[in-house]
Image (cartoon, rainbow, N blue to C red):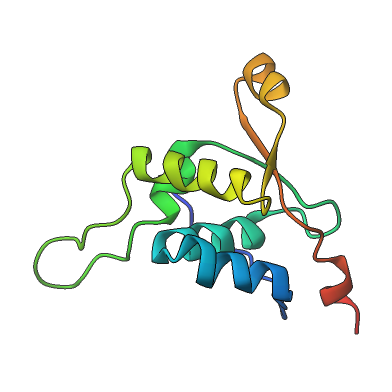
Length: 119
């Protein structure tokens, strides 16, 4: 997979109360917040569908390289898998496991952001 050049982000994203309560009070995990926001940004804003891989999510979750010194640590693939599973169990993300296995991709669904894109 080619190295991502950046995230195609919406102009405006609103988190609804249920999302905030789940992320801040139930999960209480900076990793969960990071991955959920990443998933929102890489989703198809009209359908909420994401077709990706754990490799891509791992690369996108890595902080940028510093000019001097080593790279700051980011989330590992196992951590991302756990966070995605937690988000699914919390009801913020949906996954069709049968479709994922049949097509060999990670196909997830988050809420649609179409309303946030209207002027």
